[in-house]
Image (cartoon, rainbow, N blue to C red; front, side, top):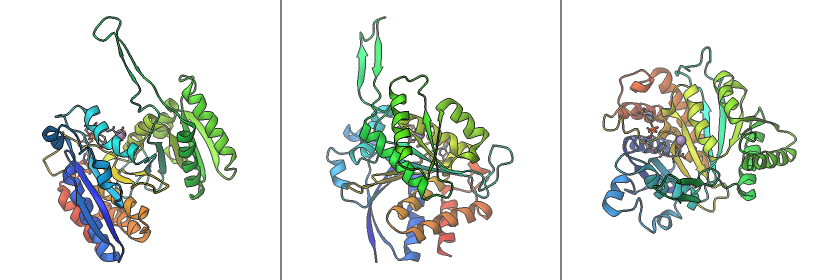
Length: 353
Ligand code: NAD
Ligand code: IPM
Ligand code: MN
């Protein structure tokens, strides 16, 4: 029986509530499809920071370097400044393990009503491919003349040829595997006069190598408008770190709720483990009430199974999510009164059937 050792980082807030449901469903899929999991649970979080002064031990990355995957809930809580907690754990893992491709499917699921009029399940089905290792998220910059009227703050974006080309290549390869074969690039080369013209140039050069894929590009402002007005026109959308972050909350909002949106932080070369986590955060506003929707976490588990080579088991989880969304219990964010655990159990049962 195939066996996988998975690092589990539930993290903060509702991460601690939805991760057990993700594991429950993965265990059910494992029983059905003959996959064994070893869960290595790590307490890295804001609570850990308050005790140890760091989000994870100094040798944290080395500890999980040879694990088969990382299953993460959410990081960040009001007890620790966000930039400290996120750079100390989530972003540290993404960068340390070169998880440069952040794959975020946006799909209108059965049983979910889109806030956009007249959109039905199947009408919206695209994937945001977000650059996950450089771009606008950089640690390069600083403050000059601090606390004076001359104070100046700078933060430099970084776009390396290697970094840009590899995410473009990933997006075009992905598009090639999909029926519509389209890649849309998010740019802003009218306002950002150095980085984004470069981004456009690399996009164009990569597009020439994929004549079977239709390229298009939009500035991020109008692209956001198109997400709302014409979400059915998109297939694969490639974006820089910040633009991709924004688009991957906007897309799921157009498909009803960010609570069900999954993501994979991939190191496609498999030199390092990849990480699977919902798009949403730790939701401190609802933490402790057992009403968090666990579907984003559970669907992220399905993406992990697919990455580990178990596509049948992965599909079974996605189908179980669709079944339960159509006829099962619902958490309050999608109009029901069910608890996190009731929804998790219903999906685990649907997987087992
Ligand atoms: P958030 O995604 O945590 O919450 C936004 C809103 O969506 C809240 O009203 C919340 O209740 C709701 N929501 C989110 N997930 C839900 C779920 N599963 N079920 C039901 N409702 C859900 O975003 P935020 O409030 O901007 O961030 C809170 C904290 O999480 C911050 O510290 C932020 O930095 C962090 N964060 C972490 C990640 C991550 O770990 N990947 C992602 C986003 C935000
Ligand atoms: C996400 C989150 C993170 C990001 C934050 C918490 C740093 O919003 O995973 O989408 O911007 O990447
Ligand atoms: Mn985000």
